[in-house]
Length: 115
Length: 108
Image (cartoon, rainbow over all chains, first blue to last red; front, side):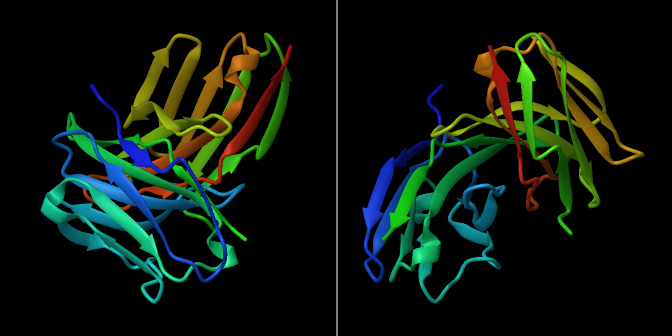
């Protein structure tokens, strides 16, 4: 079974530039998450999709971050303009309910450095 | 205060030692996840448990629902076990609550 695919693997940009990350979840997984993980911290939820609808985006800095999941499959996360504090690993995850419980599957992440 | 607390934050062990990582949570969850993150790598799900105990190779995870506490044990630790271990609590359709992780280094 193919896992959660993310690209790019690494990205270096200057502050005020824009950047986009792409995620392809495991086939058939309805729920997709974008997390931000700053070094030394646990993942922080940015946005959760159920199919192509947003379930939770309460922690998404909407003045600069946007995300979409067209057709309920692939998703993109965009930052425009980037700030230094956006340097982090951006993780995409999809989930499947197994035995009544939700199991998470993570992509390998995109490491963003904002200079 | 985080909804999920892990201890210790950092752990160094000699190869072969028995290792325990603890996780306490203050929110209601239906399942607790133990995740492993290697340097520069993605996150791999090790266990998902809602009660009792699960074992996979040298890894054992236990959970006490009444005490809201879970432990991850590694028997006969090996340098390849060096990674960050994260516990996360969640329930279907809701947000997952992540601990800040325990960085484990196993020295040969």
